[in-house]
Image 1: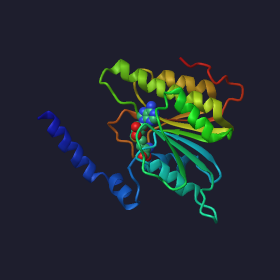
Image 2 (image 1 turned 90 degrees about the horizontal axis):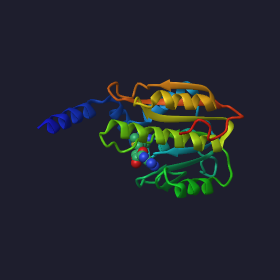
Image 3 (image 1 turned 135 degrees about the vertical axis):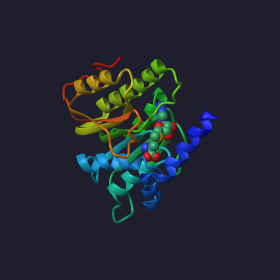
Image 4 (image 1 turned 90 degrees about the vertical axis):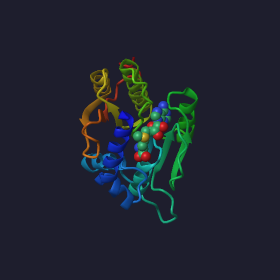
Length: 221
Ligand SMILES: C[S@@+](CC[C@H](N)C(=O)[O-])C[C@H]1O[C@@H](n2cnc3c(N)ncnc32)[C@H](O)[C@@H]1O
C-alpha cells in the first residue's frame, strides 16, 4: 500500500518534472543531462578536441551531450574522444566509444586504459551510483569506494590542467571524500545543480587543477 502511494507520487512528480519534459523535447535519453549541462556552462569543462572518460554512462544522456558539445569535423568524426563505461548495456551514441563492465574490476580498468592507448585524459566524469542495500554503513562504503576509484583513475590519467567531476552522496564519508580530493587538487567545489532534486542526497564534487606532485594513491583508503 505504502509502496503504491510512493510509486504514484513518483510517477506524478516525473510526469510534471520540467526537466523530463525538456529532455523529451531536446531528444535526450534522461533528465540527468541538465545537471551536467549546468555545471559545464558554469565551469566551461567540455571543449572540442578533448579526450573524455565517462563512468556510469547508461542510458546515455551525458554521452549525447558530450557528443553534441564536441561536435563533428568535416568527415563527420567527433572532434575529440569520449570513452564511456557502464555496468549495463547502452544504445550506441554516434562517435562515443562504449565499454560494458564494472569499474571496480581491474580487468575493466585495463580495457579502458587499452582503449586510451596512452593518451592522457582532459576530463573524467562519473555519474556512477551504486546499488543501495538499505544498510547505511554498507552503502556509504560503496559510495566512498566509487569516489576513490574515480580519484585514483584521474590521478593516473588526467592532463596537467584536467578536471574530475563526480556525483556522490551526502553519506557518512562525504567529508573524507572531499578531503581526499583536496589532497590531490587545488580547486575542489561541491555543487548541487538545479536539476538535482532537493530531497535527493546526491551532490557533485568538481575537482580542478591537479596538484603536480601528488602521489596518485595518496590519501586513499
Ligand atoms: C544515474 S545513472 C547514469 C546516467 C547517465 N549519466 C546518463 O546521463 O544517462 C548511473 C549509472 O551508473 C552505473 N554504475 C553504477 N556502478 C557502476 C560500476 N561499478 N561500474 C560501471 N557503471 C556503474 C549504473 O549501471 C547506472 O547506469
